[in-house]
Amino acid sequence: DKMGVDHGLAGRDGQKSKDRRMKRTKKNKIIATRALTGGKRKEVIFDEAARVEWLSGFRKRKQERRKYGLAMEILKKSKKHKDSMKEIRSDVVDEVDMEDINSNNVEDE
Image 1 (cartoon, rainbow, N blue to C red):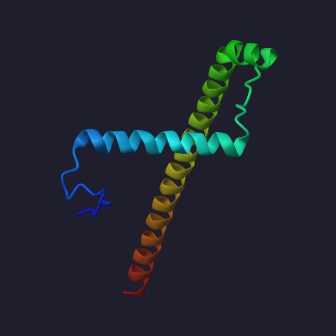
Image 2 (tube, rainbow, N blue to C red):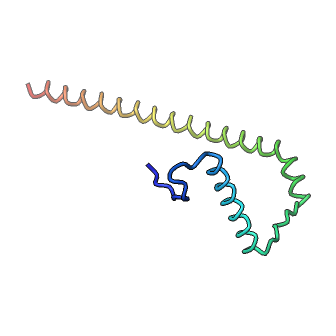
């Protein structure tokens, strides 16, 4: 529940008057901003060479993205291959260890 400012209307503030107040507040903010900045607006200057480079660079940027994606795919495949090889090696080592343990148990008996 927002407590609004009493404008002397004893709670009978209509939507139209609220809208007018909001519009006036916006207008006052704009006037204050212009007074602070000296009323001057910034001028937009286009660099024609940069614009042409950006417009003609779509193909280049797409090729760069594609090249990067392929490089990432190759890295992921090699990492996956390394992980699978590591898994295979650890399985082989586990099997050899089990054979050693079994052969030691047979020799003890």
